[in-house]
Image (cartoon, rainbow, N blue to C red):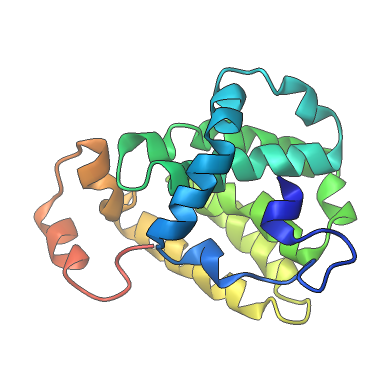
Length: 185
């Protein structure tokens, strides 16, 4: 799973950012569904608890719960159903300082559950984490994305672009916001 996401160690793609990670692609979503849906379901059922006992498997579990869920269940409530598990795993990674053993490109995925949280305290933690990561070459833009997420949660207390998928009613201010640029991730 980690080789799929980051490239195999020693390959030219290893440790390189991939455009597919952060853009909507039916083909990429289908590939993840085909290869990793059973793995995701195992994670949700708690069958991968042993992955929490060392850094790389824990990183894999975070990606499965945070990123794969968004690819597997795009525009549905299930896209966010494992966010709490991903955040719990990310917090464990930080508590053990295991994130410091990872490449910067890997650490960003440990920090994304904080950025994806609708809890303001977690948004501030995201800013702190991405602020540190932004000091590394090629990572400065990650802080700007964290800031964009923070501003939305500060303004609305949640991400309005999730409202339709989660069956939440949007306020008039959220509806207006959703009609503008940079309102969806």
